[in-house]
Image 1 (cartoon, one colour):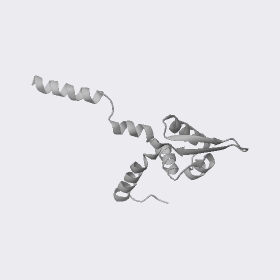
Image 2 (cartoon, one colour):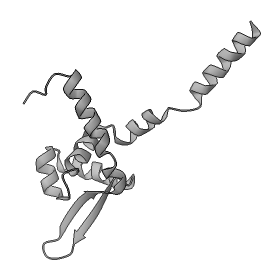
Image 3 (tube, rainbow, N blue to C red):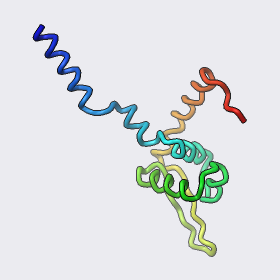
Image 4 (cartoon, rainbow, N blue to C red):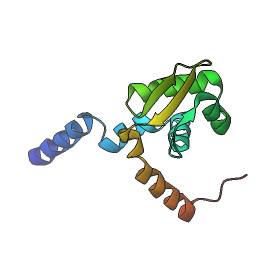
Length: 118
């Protein structure tokens, strides 16, 4: 019985060691707006207002999400100083690497979920 208790304690301790990598990854990209912006940028570099239109996010939300994604090195910002100043956003290599994840999720969703209402 002492062995079983020892194994149970080890099992609980391993759970307390921290979340698994899947949970960590979902915490990085798992918010609705982060996913929408990352997916939208898979098509290539876009200006802020293009992203605002295509994602239907408010300017405040989009700005916050882009700042978060830049901080986590998923998105990079490029500014052209010509008048008027143009700000462009694109995926970094880390962000681009998510394309296979999106493809797999889309494939899974196509098989297991009802089509999105349009």
